[in-house]
Image 1 (tube, rainbow, N blue to C red):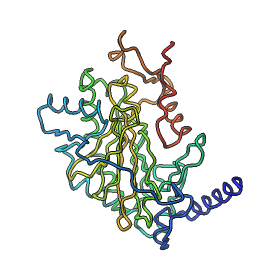
Image 2: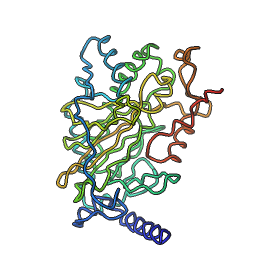
Image 3: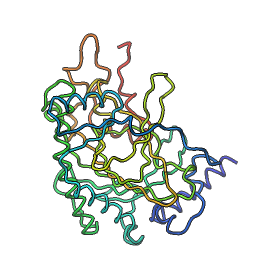
Length: 367
């Protein structure tokens, strides 16, 4: 029976991807029940209890530098997320990018299906990205479509396959966020007490990968996930989002039970910053990379978000990253071994988009 069910699920998955229209295509077809390949449980379950967004701090970048650094340090050490306000990126640039991402996903299916690919081939791909975690079984497909745009490395990518209005808005957003990312890298570096330029000198921080997520309305929201719980394989991630909501962060309550899920309600005008696994390693666990997920909130409204992942541009085999020497002492030895960016990214692909893969880089206490 199990083999038959696995075969049926594999066949349904193949048919879904062959349609090349994503979850949005299901909604356009008028689906009234969630297909089994998306189900998280056989029966609807009540939403997980979650507290409000007041637990996610805000960092005002217009404050005196020392005050801003202190706020960044406190937020990055505790919940690993914070809303950056008064960040200097024009509101029109952010709003235009979010609108452009929505427009791409809501264009006629024939236009978007031409870019459908499960493999990140070229600068632009569109798909419902599976949550691959083979060692843990087959998790459900996320109720989410994603447009992935790569802005590097190397020469400027060819984005000509994107609609002109969408292309211009996303390019302008990435240009604006590059400056913001450099500023954020400096603040995080100061928060670690290693000097403003330390992270930039060690890594050459760049925001080359942009992922525009689209979470369609769902007829049975409690039976699907927008994304499973995971940490980000980045130095840090910057998120812009519309007002629909659905992002949740796991907050450790100190009880050892894994913590509670906290709703991260959108804050008008803010950019959401979260610490990634690479920075957790580089900081020798001084900064915290925290699990987060997306739940589907609405039967009527689609949620749109844009994640820009900031990572080291240094990616040669000789470029090794581990805890910064300044953060390693006899009282707190290095907690992780060094690795290259390709090695780390390969570990994440093998692990799947669930949880975190950094445990395999931890140094054994017996060493």
